[in-house]
Image (cartoon, rainbow over all chains, first blue to last red; front, side, top):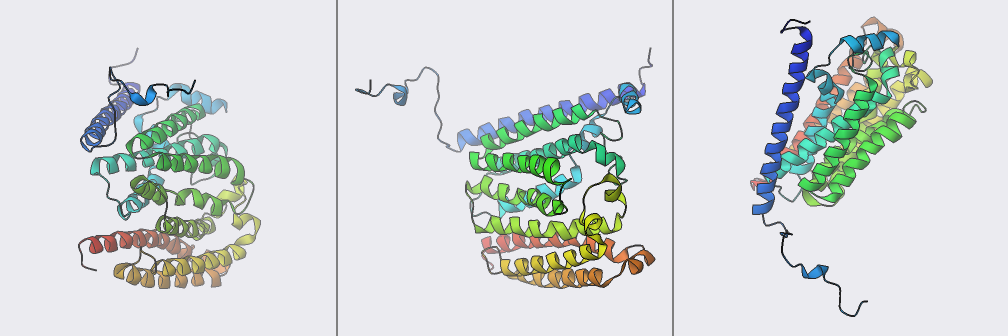
Length: 62
Length: 308
């Protein structure tokens, strides 16, 4: 119905491009933040398959 | 209303329309003051964390802008200055503005928390709440002191920036808050003086509408004196330094001079030269805030280099 370069397609393209670039920048920023936080020595725990003593019920509390 | 609907149906909004929801010009001031708040804080932030913090503070400000445009579409449509915003001009539906505003509010607060700390995120959330609920929805349309209260919302960013770096408050960020808080009323009242009929037609109780233009001129002078006193006193705090002292001295002389000129003018004088003094004062107040905050940064830089 519309020609390929119809105004409507141009606007939709601009929006898709804008959202795409935002998402890519967001991912890049998240990656950068992760690298900084992990290498920066922030207090962190790996939660997978590791016994966390603070989750064990305190003896005699029940 | 039917015309607006017709526009929405045939018009496909572009990315720029959504970006305009975020009030980019207000956002630039937010980025600037938040950045200075963060950089003059005594704790140094990793550049990537700092970039993320400033970005999400800016997104939070943008979200407030979008929510403000959702709520205020009816009065924005009446005022010349704002009639071309995306919602009143029919390029975006009000629900779009609401959706963008809510989504970005949640995103910015959560991400600021993850990137920095809970205190900064909480302060950002409070800022958004304050601007939308307290200012936009409640007080803007009900009191001539609306600008004074709205100014508080705009004054939070340097505090958020500082807390993002340090995790807690101190006297310095509160001083920066107070400076912007006192700066906002004379800045916007000068605008209201030369944007004459806008607020009147929109039924917003601006001081010019409720108390008259003569009283507004006196208010501008009073707030300018208070602002000059505070920015002078700030020189004695840890924020002050040689560059700041010189900048504050010169800028305050110009501020007082400009506000006295405005105070002494009658409406006929102003009409005659097309509100020249008011327009000049409005532009000068922008320079004033920009240079004062730049001076904080320069002094901090000099101190870190061990020059002063």
